[in-house]
Length: 220
Image (cartoon, rainbow, N blue to C red; front, side):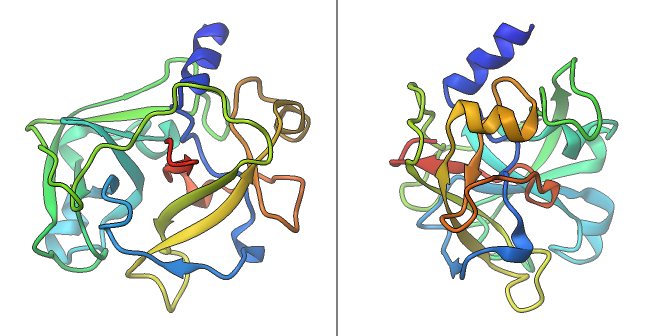
């Protein structure tokens, strides 16, 4: 199972979590859904029914017509009927013309995942209906088919839910890919994909960023 996990990471399903410290983050840029049309989120159905955006759980990336990729820590122990997927949203609060709300049929997480650990931190949310692409508005994230070289410029994108001023908008989080050796040294986890900020060469785990999609050279 360890070799299987490494294979998954190597083909690009490495959205375990972004290894960075948000408190020391670089100046971020507000982005639009047109720039990152695969960005989505998972939300608590009960809270979401009261106020759109209030049910936010974590980021997710649309990878197929019915599949949202996120982290195991986000969905472990939850019931599918209690979770909604939202894609194509311009902002967290309210519903926009491009928003699509998805009922979740099934939640699955890696069988070897242990709460609080970075290893095997992979989760999938399966919607009960198809989400067809709309060019420039709603698309599937490109999956990397090759290993990302160290020091490659990468972009993470996620909802700034832990900040006051930007809590409603998606923001860009520029980082660089770390070498496998550096990643293992700092996480003691085989096969985990790590990034770091230019002024902080040593990554640190921040589970607040769970599930954000990362693109390196336009590959997910």
